[in-house]
Amino acid sequence: MSDTPKLLKARRKHSLLFAVAIIILLLVSEPWMTAGAFPRDCMLWLGYALVAIGAMGRIYCSAFIGGKKNEMVMREGPFAVVRNPLYVFSFIALVGIGMQSGMLVILALLVGAFALYYPLVVEKEEAFLRSKFGESYEAYMREVPRWIPNLKLWNEPEHVDAMPKFIRRTMMDALVFFLPMPCFALLHALHASQTLPVWLTLP
Image (cartoon, rainbow, N blue to C red; front, side):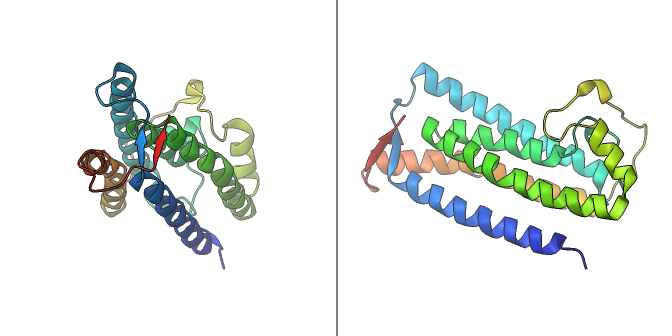
């Protein structure tokens, strides 16, 4: 029996626990940079762009993989240039969320957590895929980078057998990346009105 469901369950649990810790920190923190300051506005708008890129990228990937990740070695579209495009786009969106917070500390925590945790997740997933697909996946690992896309390898077919249900689920998942935007605005308003205390001012 595959360990993939267990890995997925553990990943969701750990991600939830980390998200709760970040939320608690945000409840009592405000950015050191004042609202409307040019550097903070730059971070904010760049954050919006990165979240949009990350969410749209995940949806685009889903048209290729369509729930078939453990059934075949996908080597087309985004999977032709990097082995884990879904995680790469999730990382891009995560960086965007960190920038929207206006706090470099939050950005560093998010990036650090991803850098520490997800390589371990990918190693376990790749070990499973190597055992299942053998040499075909070994060749894929040798030819396609794990994290940094090699755009020279781009290969986009004219048609793909997409699964609408899987794409719809990915779209719903991608909406989560947009939730911090109104939440940050709400937190700022609550702090400004002193409804919530500000115990920390973070760079």
